Length: 447
Image (cartoon, rainbow, N blue to C red; front, side):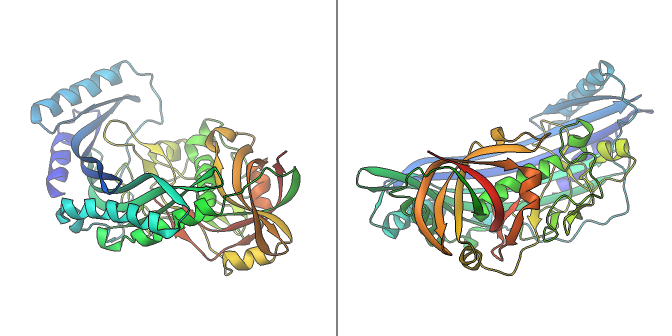
């Protein structure tokens, strides 16, 4: 990690007078093992490193990257970034991040085990996962995929404005997609287990969850249309939160692509809703001490007891808004510059189990899966419509499975109509956590 920081600092030092230079350096390794019928179907180990250089001069910004850390290539990349800047349109708000005095959190996000864990043991985990999924239920007829994935990610950022910081994280997970069959009908289910190193993974849990999700949908039918209460499974809630988080960025507000753009200080949700983005939470799969511009990440309450209190910002959007960065710059790697995004979004959990929440509902729908959600949401109006499947709730108990239905509402109304939050907070392999969520009035369209 210190080597990457040395490289970033050295290249940033090549800045000319009157220009700002940012250097983002990455080294990443990733392993993926997929099992099929007790054998290795595919094995991939990839290692990549590279540098992204951003140059800002007279309000003009240019970016270039190279997939090598060779000195000659980095010099050429800097020249290319300068050249790209010369053709850009000036923007008075363009400028690099500057140190803000916030010290990065001390987080234990790295495990040497990911690098030393033997390849044969990674393969064994994937094969064990497949075996456990078949053993979980006699109705499991096939496995779409059973895989082990790990990553070790190191990065460093240095700028001519005084930033010099580095971070590293590891992560791994196993995931399995099962096929359950009965009476000529087939249903699918998935399960996973995540951790910082392989010792934290539990293939048995992933296999059992996948089998349960698939088998409990066997015999599903398409019901009629009605309005009813829904309970979102944590996996579904996490997907909805990901969409909400996208609309709560300064970038979305500036582009007119946020339904909450002019509602700061308003009550936008039920008072039981507190929504926070906090990449300093080590339990989050996407936790990190630094954002994509080298600024310390921090806990940012977005909605507190139903009131919209903040948007997420990077250096550019905060400058446009006359505010400070919330340490929310995100990057897709060294090939692109920073944007703004939620890094570890979560609802403050409640005190009831999912079973307790279901017990309080006379007529409802436990939604365990959705399809087409991201394409079915309008970020400006908040309207959404998505395919859904799960189990009916009757008189406080789970009843028959249903599928091929559509649920529709608006994000704004969904947040206002929340009537219960579970205590089953789950960090998932994504940038938002899941929790069981009850929404009191949603349209379900079926037959």
